[in-house]
Length: 141
Image (cartoon, rainbow, N blue to C red):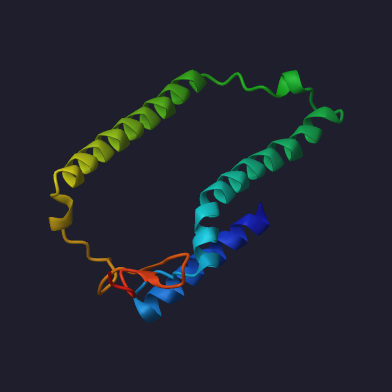
């Protein structure tokens, strides 16, 4: 978990340095590969942190201090707070779907290019291609 968090922090720092000095996203293969894996690494770090927390808590319950059955909370309101969390996630999920649907319609109709993007790179966008020349540059037909 700590290694994954450090790797994600380094990836973010790499992007920040490139953005501050060149105002462009790094286009190296290593950065693009690491960025593609960042989502999976973040989820693995999240789940491993949860497992570490729960596995670390369990021995204190078992070793004569308290049985696992006694460690379960009987506090009132657990189901209510669970329902609130589920409702919040449902609202966020529905909002996400509606926003993505509206964005796809806007770009499908050709209106997405008219919106200003203050964080866009300056100049034409060039992406590295497998042939060595950047897409948008090089050979003309």
